[in-house]
Length: 289
Image (cartoon, rainbow, N blue to C red; front, side, top):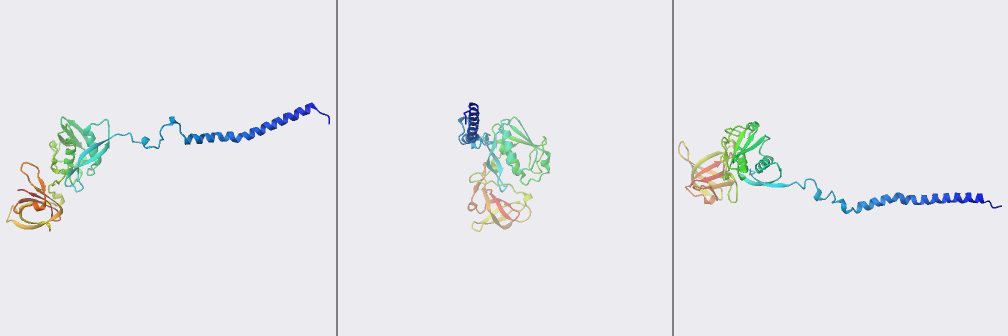
């Protein structure tokens, strides 16, 4: 066969095209995989400029909110006296200390029914106005609620008394029993403390009654006291009364607060005041001498 230069050039050109196509096909998988590999590296090794992981505690929502510890005088579980309780509440920069204390009191006062509250101060007196709906509420421990509010606010520097109002106006009573017509001052007599449990007054609405008498005998083991009951009309009557397991006994102190004493310290012949419960047991005794 005779050599033809033109045919040879065509064959060479076709071979070059085929070889180029094969080379491009062979490199394509590597090019497609490259972005995937880069993504894997970026996910496993974040750059220094990426910042903290958004799932860490430092970046958790709300962690940068400041709180303040508020001490309030709140009724205890029995509803017979107050005790100091501490609550952590979020700080509101627009509030002063009195406003923050009232907000905490309202938030944690489980005994308080839903009611509107307004606050303003005049000199050293904090005025707290309840909405008129408070008058329709049957509040079992109204006296403690009033003193809880007064004690919680009157302990703040610059506040010596609290005037409780209804719809901005003075009222004789909050819900039918507690006197609120004048500004009320802080009263520690109902606040429990170490080695002292206060005695709440007898509450007729709970079936309680108050008696006076003289001690005839005390049986500590049997938890029984024999008392000569003083009556306004008729002859004195001797009664044997049972004491509640958590009975509180006070010794009245002249020109000072009562002291809590043990049942064994109750002297024969002492004049006492007794608070009887609805089940005819004694929850409190106050020795007058």
